[in-house]
Image (cartoon, rainbow, N blue to C red; front, side, top):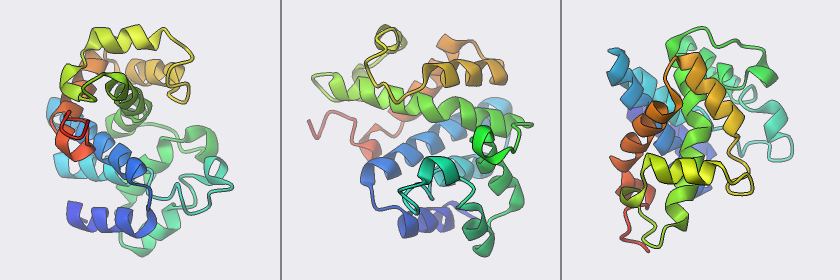
Length: 191
């Protein structure tokens, strides 16, 4: 499985461009963590890219079936079991698959955080990730009404499971997202 094949799967099952951008942001963050830990960047990136590909398949039950509903589809397409297992582990509460590897813990740690960082960028006058820093994210973090869907407790738990201080974790993910800001439409050019 290579990145192009993974992205074809994303395109096949996902219509919502914002959801695709979320998966691209998670991919970038996963690649950053793979580099940090000396792991295979391609595998880690593919895990991030595919982790939510099935969200739209059953919209009425997605929170209850995601990502389990997508696992058989990934198997049909020849996705390695290591990747599927890691994707399943990012929703332990639903799938029962425990996070046992650094790969698993990284996916869980970055997933919600990318959404919060995106929301912070979108409220900036420039709509640019380049104008966001850790302090801005932490300031918005305290406002529980802001980006309510970004579960702060999951972000904190994820950073702790990964063994990375929260501010450092935010910095890693932010820098990764800044590296692909134009792809995410968060470079201030479309404001």
